[in-house]
Length: 274
Image (cartoon, rainbow, N blue to C red):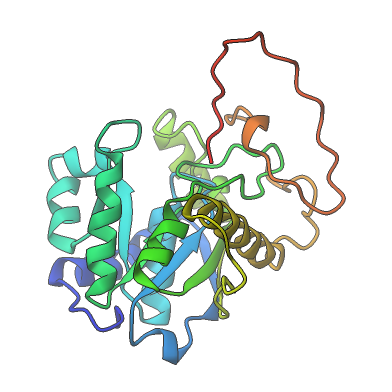
């Protein structure tokens, strides 16, 4: 079990192994691609898309399967839970308090981990994506800033099918979702991109570089996901009816025609952010 050159806490080793047991009755996990050997020996950022509340468990099981143990940037709510919070802290994961004044605290923590040679997993979208077609939406610039500050390469990772296990509105009807998943055992895919995103051509001011790098990172995740979505390039085969599509962070894709959004009155705040 590897996590670049950093030590893997015993709790994280236990959680990695446990995830394989949790996933087994709920879905058929298929893992493709890999993290090359030369990227396992130093700081590395894994950047993944986010489609379901089940994603972190699926990703943990996939990481265990290929023998890596990245530290995960996870929502602060997990750290506040009585049991899960203690486990997350003991495993060495990194807290992200989204929507609060403390959200920026995650970047120095991640930078410290990368400086120590850690492998870090992050969801650049900053939330479960609400793209109407379930492609990666426009990302936040945090991952790009982490890469620029640390010099760590960014490897795209794609996951697909977890929404057939747990839908967007989980924990509502959680028992029903679990029983349905155990009955159907849908196929869930995780693909590691194998080649880091090329950020060598990114130039300009720090802000411009962060935006350009973010776009390239999301394109890398998009291209990796396309390998998993053959036959589902437009609408998913399984539609999550609990998701409310959000067009404000939709990214352009080849062949995609975006609907014209209604004009907002002057002074209305925009929900999208870079």
